Amino acid sequence: MKTEGATEVTALRDGSAWLPGPRDDDDFVGRFTEIAERHYARALSAGALNEWRSQQLGRVLAKVTERSPFYKRHLAGIDVASISLDTLSTLPFTTKQDLRREMFDVLSGDVSEATFFYETTGTTGRATPCPRDDKEVISSNTHITESWRAIFTKHFGHRRPSVGLMGPTEVHSFGDTLGDVARNVGSCNAKIWPYSPVVGFKKALELMRDLRLEVIVATPGVCLNLARAARHYGFDIERDFSVKLFFLTGEMCTPALAANVDAIWGVTAYNILYGSQEAFVMGVACPSRNMRLAETNYIVEVIDPETSESLGERGTGELCVTMVADGIKPLVRYRTGDLVRITDDAAHEGDLPGAQIEVIGRVLDQLVVGGNQVAAATIETAVLDGVTDCYGYQVVIDRDPATGSDVVTVRVELTDPTADHVAAQSRAIVDRFRTDLGVRCEVEVLEELDAVVSTGAFVSWKAARILDRRCEPGHEERVASQLAKGRGINS
Image 1: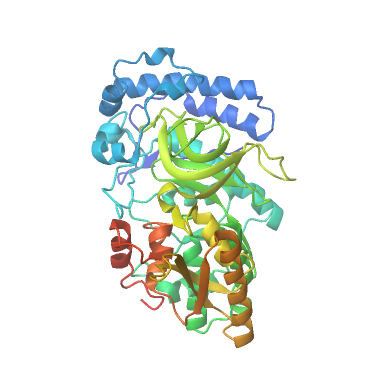
Image 2: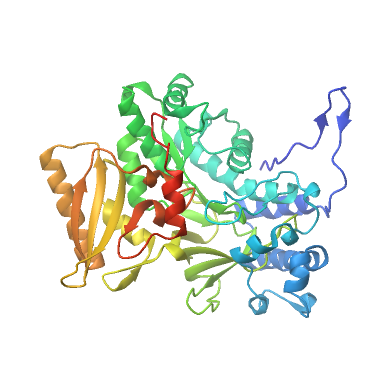
């Protein structure tokens, strides 16, 4: 199993070699590699996995209380040497608010000790530093590499396809991380960001065609906008492109949305990974399209978002993770803000090992509709279940002044605007909202949706997809509206 990470030796201009300075390296990479190899060979017992986590928990707690100014204060007065897997839930949470307030004080070392520097987008709050050292890069990328290998083997056999990476570069990890994974599996990769002022959608489509790219990695929104742009610029999806797989990441992707991408492009779409800048990659896709938890990298808890009670390692609630890589920024009991469902469902043929994880939206993206609190995934499924030709959607929520009840309008942009098709799709959406959410619904088919629907990966699903006219726009909605300017497919 290859676990390549950052380059270890760099040639200087004078031809000499620059070697990295001393790292806080206790042969973590060697020990992790052995654990990961056993994990993917299905030879790692539950006891051995817990022993690995227990050892690393001790190392992480010792490091953060010695080297992180934040954790020195945050865990002051606690005998961290006595903390075990069974008593971890007695420690206080780390939150996004902590990261935004403390900034570099969260780090367990100077930022110069990192291999890469990244930060969050800063669109919904203060951008926070997210540096990574070799331990964090290698341990995180290993799981993505194994995922890609398994999926490529299913679809391409021993041949390795060329990959187009359509994500931001700048100080975001997308290009480095997935470029490294493409190298690990032996695939050529081209970094093509359609929203870049030097690329754009027309150039991105030309490169997809000319390089005969077979795998595209992008957000669901980008994939749908690529299809819209292909129509706008006169490309024929079936004739002009060689794409076989879309690897979707960066925003919530329900099975219904993935199936819609499948149908529009005539491909197989995978919700390829679940992660964040702050917490790295926590789940990766299997050939069956299930997603498996990166169990060797985290101690996970499912938290009741209302009571903050830890429900253990399985169940439905907010995901809380403690990292086991004692790198430059290990986080202890970090509340991700994401609603997940973690189960021990039986593996399908070809699945990777580990618990199954399903992401059902952010805690903050939950909405009260028709008097019931519903998750983002429930709303998206009500819109798209069975829909196979939708370029995008937006849900508008109003309150009927006469009855005080909620009324929903679903705006969609369809590839097939014929009257019979529109009528059939509209009836199905209306029926699902009445049955699944208990609300009255109307459907509007538009020639083009507001550009705000393309901002989901940068702000939030809710700000991009929901127009809630029962209340004034919040901070995220205002940010998304501003960001949407100039994001057309012909920009």
